[in-house]
Image 1 (tube, rainbow over the protein chains, first blue to last red):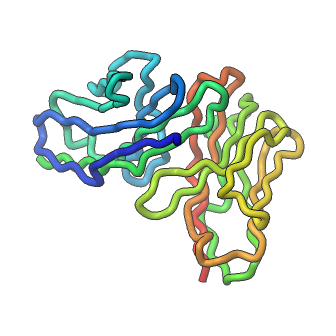
Image 2 (image 1 turned 180 degrees about the vertical axis):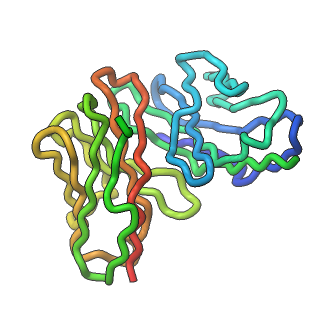
Length: 109
Length: 114
């Protein structure tokens, strides 16, 4: 079955602390993995994707095929990082997105 | 280009009524998707168009749901005989020719069934 699991509904940290949002997936094949972010009162937008292997707003994510994970990390959280984060995958045959349930990140001053 | 546009932003209706939502994708995008998001969940795929062809439909899309994209530009999603369980945010996304390019989402239409 194709599934994305985000075990944490809420993650609260203080400004400057490291952040790791967990994402595990189940897919038979080689999926593409994404992180989408939704800031308050804004639309869902792409944060990063594994094939780009880039850092966006200080966030990185490494695809671990052995552990079927795609955790999102940032060494020093900022207050403006507070948002809802969704991990998602798409397959090679179809690029519909399968989303996890999301993790709300709260960064306190 | 203002991105993906959805109309209306909010729709409140009584159970049993029909509703129709509209999505205008980014102008040069030939791929168009509909998703549904309920409280506490991530978006769930409903259906996919490439140009005017509806190429995939989820099992979530019961026979009360129908989507069209008649000229390969805007799309409509109609729900007939609405039920309480249809209350959700309905999201539209579009993508360019390259299927590996990311999807761009609209603000969504929030449907509330009384």
